[in-house]
Image (cartoon, rainbow, N blue to C red; front, top):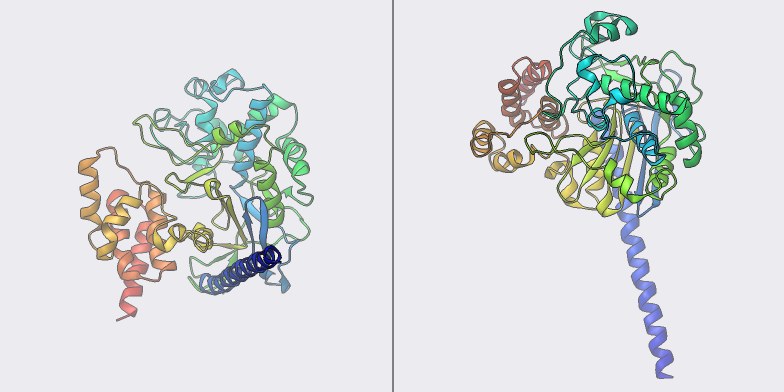
Length: 461
């Protein structure tokens, strides 16, 4: 009888533990839902899908807001969003599939597979294209928009072949569309298929991505949400910083760099398939793909093979980020993945994903520095106690101890804007934008960000 009573007590205790755990888990998800709704208001995001994956299982998959403002179409689980440059993660997987097929070796030079390349390009290793350390000039003119010198695609490619290398291979990480144009050509050369066909048959179909497709603003795509942005200038009915405008996405020649449209639910299937052996045969291939390359000076670069090496300290984070509107974070050591797709172009969008991750692991919150680039973290830790007022001195202190210490313009820009726009602390953002302009005097984001910070600070007095 006593044993039976003990068994009943143990069973009751187990039920209580499970009930408490379930209640706690539900409270956490409810808090995340409230957080997302609040962030959509503050960030002015019309529509959004999010999925949370924990230990290979989807624990939250939801849609919020409006997909198409003009026609008042709500977001649902079938709404397609542009993932833009996060397409590069699919390119990285495609390359690793060809490695497993025995068709290429990422340590080999690209000139071994593609003919008629400029002499300076022939010796560049495939992995240097994947992790943006090639030094090959960029096809896009990021300051003026469009292709280099305002040329059309084919003419710009020809002009690019005449331009000098930007730096020695492996010297630094420099995000570059040309790298992935060459990788797309490599995939087509090795498979005899178009890039889109290869990704469809080797990734979309095995992962169960039945509605995912390639396309841009010129294409008629059922259930696709257009992308919006806050107007950056005043013109006719558009008011700078206040009204919405449509963004135009057109990259038919650059599918390996951008162009996938899908749902967050389909992306979740893809991430699960990727980590359960359906897309890559070995865990070793996954580890190689997610490991950033060391630069020539021994520091860690900002990209792995098709993926942003977002966080290289424990817990590590690898990410796909596209068009400042869609992103997915994977924390392999924690068995956690966060997907957020939106129809709103903004600054520092990945902060939202890391804040969601922070509900599970507080150190990952963007507000705790969890989303900052590795290079920023020591500077953040030194300058945070003084609200970043001493950020210049802190930078000099770190630089004096480590002459190789560098912060990219993009990393500094994202940090400064996250403090200004997301934390809404213009006074704290001012010294960050000043440091950005000290390091990168011609930064247009630095100039506009500093002006906006000063204006916002004045209005608070």
